[in-house]
Length: 487
Ligand SMILES: *[C@@H]1O[C@H](CO)[C@@H](O)[C@H](O)[C@H]1NC(C)=O
Ligand SMILES: *[C@@H]1O[C@H](CO)[C@@H](O)[C@H](O)[C@H]1NC(C)=O
Ligand SMILES: *[C@@H]1O[C@H](CO)[C@@H](O)[C@H](O)[C@H]1NC(C)=O
Image 1: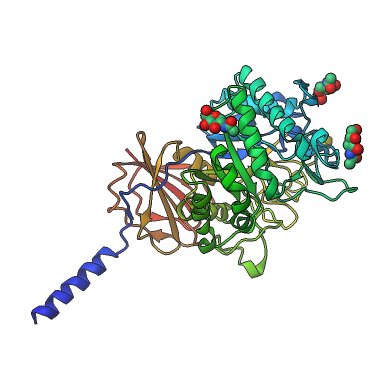
Image 2: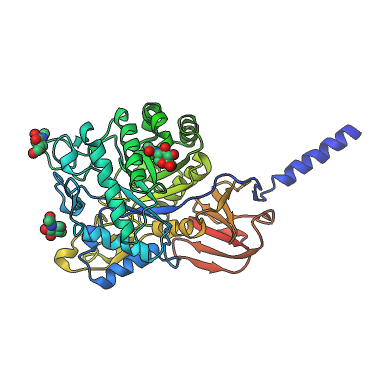
């Protein structure tokens, strides 16, 4: 009897513990280090807009009242030699050895300086291709970097970083070989963008040469981020070739995730990074372009497996697909930093002047590559309007409430279809909840005590953006993101 009685008590205790009370671990995971997006290549187009629109774009991206990015990626252009699309062909400062044209790339520099004015704490300079003078084919795509020019390439980057430092633009990080796995073209055919193939065997030499060049110009504090290879599978198989000899010169080990791995595969990233570069942070530095509308992928389920491809999906489903990638990056891989690919895009796949509803409706002709969109025909029709997405609002939750230096705390016992991430720093705590289902789901947060005292919540749904909620959150609407704030 006594035995049966205690068994019953035990079962009751177990049932009680798992009775839908969300809990937050008191054991910290990683310390966060920036949320950003890239400045390629939209500045080339947006620089042609009226000044009022340009400064509004900067405010939307960088002001804490808006997206509040804590990191910004400036694309150091190679001159666009061989690139067929002028909107994706950034100018270069490079003229000849030691000679630079600082009037070049006024468009990119404008938005870079806007980031500085808005006090964005982290600025990353990234390179898709070296200037044509250093490449195998005298272009900035469809070729590679000549070994003999590695020191010249490194010195050129260090000179650019020094120039900007003198202008008050302090780059904190440099990425010399963005997506080294692909040259972005075939010789003889105009390329769609700049790119430079850098085989794994060449990568360490570039990283070490750049470290040495930065050191020589008193830029010891500037960290190198590498190798930004496109797919996790490539990182896992190639890391052993380049990372051991580069590790002491690398600040953060960076990956893109264009194969959209599942959690089990993504979980292999940290062990490989730790094996070859012990003690280094891992960063997730680029993603976009979730194939939007494919019946076999159940596109109405934000947690369904993703693959790379086209489709414009400006609503909550598209946003929560990004949310699922952020969850994987922070909670499964343990990345401390996350970058969306391009902040603005014109590939909306429809004509907003011909059909006003097109900017909020899914289509298969556009791309999920921007947070904000602009009219691809602006130059001829004069339409300077900007079009926002729910993806912008979702990233706004992350960028605003995951401050640099905040610690992440694992969240347990979440209801099915709700994803959660918790963070805390000296300014307070935040619990981000994403309801991936179309239905309202009850959440019991009475067990969340370690983040501080509830103050308010901010919520974005299909029908509302950034609504403040003053009373305790007991449920989350279908297809929503809610950030609960604590002090
Ligand atoms: C410098 O770049 C600007 C902007 O593209 C261009 O107009 C100018 O001709 C360039 N000067 C030199 C010396 O290349
Ligand atoms: C690239 O330009 C250099 C200098 O003009 C020249 O010597 C070299 O042959 C060119 N390379 C190719 C692949 O065209
Ligand atoms: C760069 O400077 C750091 C700090 O002084 C030093 O530890 C490192 O060995 C240097 N690296 C190279 C490649 O010169």
